[in-house]
Figure 1 (tube, rainbow, N blue to C red):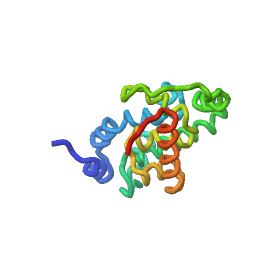
Figure 2 (figure 1 turned 90 degrees about the horizontal axis):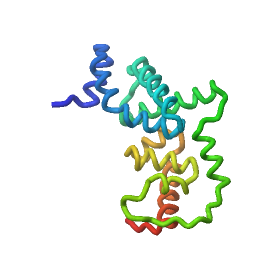
Figure 3 (figure 1 turned 30 degrees about the horizontal axis):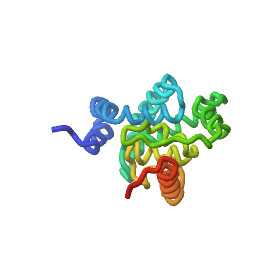
Figure 4 (figure 1 turned 45 degrees about the vertical axis):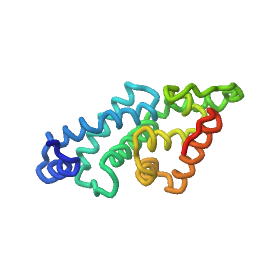
Length: 179
């Protein structure tokens, strides 16, 4: 039977058990890397930042308070690593360049929804940067609104507004109906 995150975290904190922490890394690395790839727009940079994220998490594991999920805690560290790297480098990332290009793109093109297999990127393209980030955290990664608020640093009400507006934009643009 696989150990729970909570038991692995406990072993990592109390016993300084690196194997327990390695198992946590294995469980959560794909989502951390995915979030960083979204933020950075550069897979190599995202992989470097993910490595830094897990190093920082190991050093700070004793500060984890279990108020949210361990994954949300890791994603917060990942976001902070990304922002710190951005400040250090002083250069714009591919993500920011894409966002600027999107704001200058003529949005009058008609796009059609082609069923459940439609590319999620097409849905995300029509959203603003904050809406897109929140939609990825909530629908892509599966965080609760509270966890997305914690990871993004945005107030809970703002997160809920971004989700609602994002869903409405996608439904309106692509004619998607749902609950």
